[in-house]
Image (cartoon, rainbow, N blue to C red; front, top):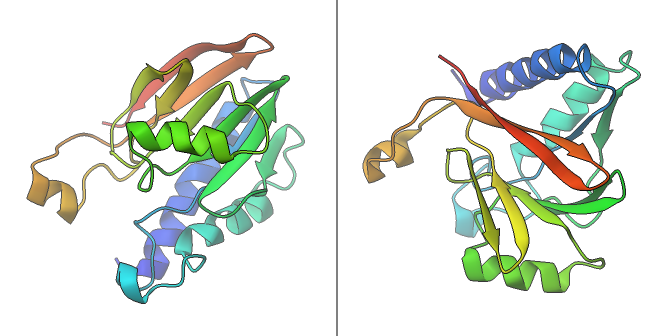
Length: 179
């Protein structure tokens, strides 16, 4: 597949998934955070804000515009991090490529409001953790592994996480593993 086909395919898969979830939940909130996988050129030659990830919410907004319980959240900080409020709790959303364990603490210090949890990706597998009192939820990769993962011997199946949230925070987390 070429890059355009990949972006369209992923956007369609995400749209289908959100549409299916919308049948079972009162509200679905969707946010896209740019990461290191969608630069148009090598890191040193790419402008920070020029990433293919930004096309996905544009597509999904159009595709799911008739679903009244689906909300596509625009980034309010920059395209690499966002702050969203779900039922009175603030969640920071990041890709994770610029944030190590120590980076999480730097991240929460630079955000304009106190956060309850950090939602992230980057490492291609689902996991949860607690870092200095901040809940972290890492969601896997829809595509599974790529060439970089193969070189580093990181294997795994395509996967995502679904968090069910109440006013007290994350009630449960579901691992969605695609066979």
